[in-house]
Length: 155
Image 1 (cartoon, rainbow, N blue to C red):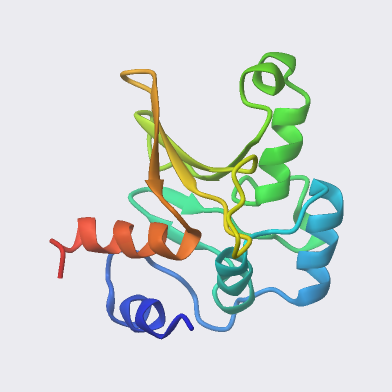
Image 2 (image 1 turned 180 degrees about the horizontal axis):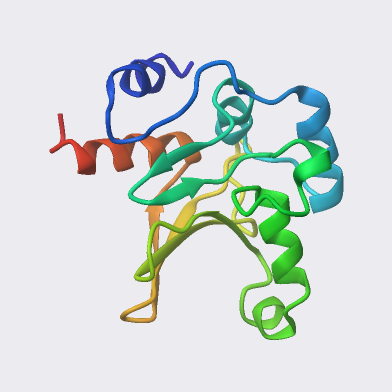
């Protein structure tokens, strides 16, 4: 199902990832319980096979081991917990789950209010310079492919 993306990930220099560092189903289920919703299928696939990656000085969030989650700033739950403590954030972005913050100009997140029939959330881009939010990709898999294509000249 994700053969094209697997091939791109195996051949890219745009996203650095570490083979054999995927997480397990139990960790994903634990995260879903805390979040209160199922994670999208393509993100679950990423977590199981890759878990996290590094691009342009930022981390694509994954799931750190539970014993490190309180200090792992590249963990999706760590960031979710930080935002829960921020009342302004909760009011402004009640359905945002951050995925990737590459720099001070933009950040990428799931819009958890817009699940499609396959269970996917769109990945949104928040352009912090222009204070604009737009859909970057319809799924997490498409998000990764688009990041790779943009960094490698669309090949």
